[in-house]
Image 1 (cartoon, helix red, strand yellow):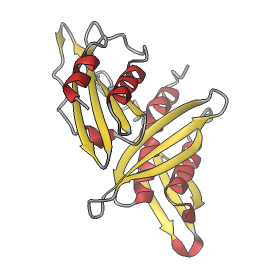
Image 2 (spheres, helix red, strand yellow; image 1 turned 180 degrees about the vertical axis):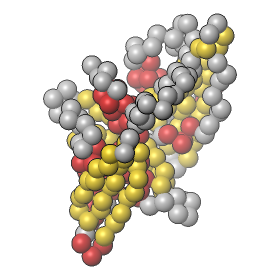
Image 3 (tube, one colour; image 1 turned 120 degrees about the vertical axis):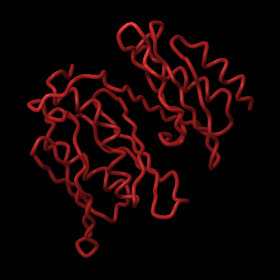
Image 4 (cartoon, one colour; image 1 turned 135 degrees about the vertical axis):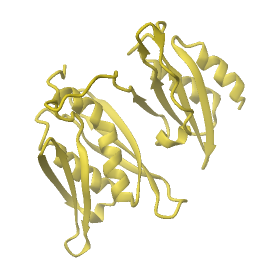
Length: 234
């Protein structure tokens, strides 16, 4: 595998400005930076990058797409070259994070994203609780703790339904990617919408597999939830 060739091919994609790579635990993590006037926006750029990376690698591939924003007449500073594995979650995973445009927050405008308040495990009751909050409201989801990380996904989705009546996604799977650091777990999750056959993926680190799985679920859903909670979901 030649990473120079992979980078050259990725940079030929419209809007791509840079690419970074990291190999660990038999997986290739790729971070693609895109933006500017030639960025085609939602045109399948993440999927194209994922397919290109898969052709160049004999290992499973995780791709993260980071978009830049233009501010005024100039181009905003590039995001820091973060380790791509911070958002890799498994074979064929594509994570798209689009930083919101800068805006002056007002006191009257509630935080559009849900916030993870607590993840509680009760071994004697075989139960995991996920507590979410937003703008003074709070919702709790519960699931059987013996289910492992995917139980936290179920509990988180149940809690999310306390805020979203339109959520079409259900838990598909949860996978622990890394446990090498003491007290630090990296978990990837997938959620599936049966009606549209669409998937959403998320990845996050936490102090336990359960905690990381709950955070990864929010990572997968928060962007689409923000649109709904702001009343602009289409």
